[in-house]
Length: 320
Image 1 (tube, rainbow, N blue to C red):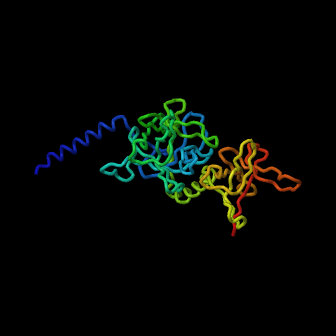
Image 2 (tube, one colour):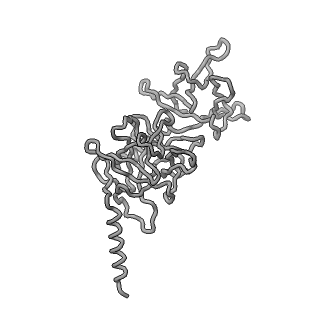
């Protein structure tokens, strides 16, 4: 049988590829090297946007612990590493193929948080009435709302600067939890956020990725706290914020349920004391502070407060 039809088919594919790549160029990291699928990168804000935050991380943006939006870490933090890939096709791409601008890709956080949920980015499909739906994890690389493009917008020094787009808009930022920027899909040019890509050093990835994730998990992800005590066996030992109207500074009690929002806290680092990290406990509504217990005793009771002077700082001592 003649091979002519096969040759014609291959030529057609090559011509189609040439047409599709018109106007595209290689995406490059801060070292000027091509960004490749399966390699890992930190995504950090760039350009003249006045944005001084850190790299991108998944952060609880809703009631559920693992419905994580995407926000910036604290200034100086690189963020959580990501990898880029192409949407699934019948013929998979070669490993570590370079990424082009204006070409459909998927983005995945390389993180151990929320192990039961996908780390692929997606545009929140439940925000049908929202003009600026959130960018979050939990995506499916086969779905349209998990597809993004990288567009070059300019250079800063010798570093290429990019933005993310979809067929419906541009990735931008709005004020989010912990005074950080939350990623959303927007058509407001003023909210567009620009990025650069920093390749994760393969030699230090195994060492730094775990510590980064743990550190970011402490400061950026909701946790629950439980006393390990045999007192009041019939009562839960999970902490909770006592919910009652007209109480300006509700007390912190035990008896909480980990699935409830009022049993969720965050740990934020505030500094160091003689080489020991110092933290504060927060919720979405305020800081954990202390006030004198009723009576003449010197004991203090924990409350939720917005009074900075009452905020209590803590350190953690491992039980041997």
